[in-house]
Image (spheres, helix red, strand yellow):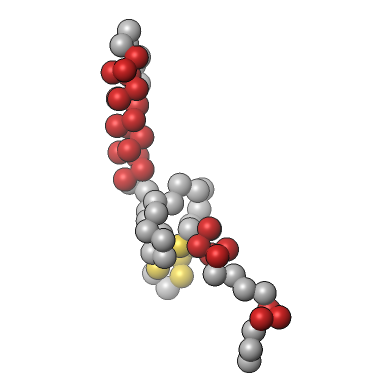
Length: 65
C-alpha cells in the first residue's frame, strides 16, 4: 500500500483493504463470525471457530450416559 500526504484517505484505503480481506475469510457455522485465526475446525463439512469449539466443550463428569 502506498501512503500519501492525506492521512484520512490513507486510513480509508487501509480500512477498505482490511474489510475486503475479512470478507474472504470463512465464517463459523455456529456464531456466524469470520474466522481470523490461523486455523478452523471442519466437522462433517461444517466450519467452526476455536471460540465456539471451546464454548461447546463439556467436562466428562457432566456426561450422563
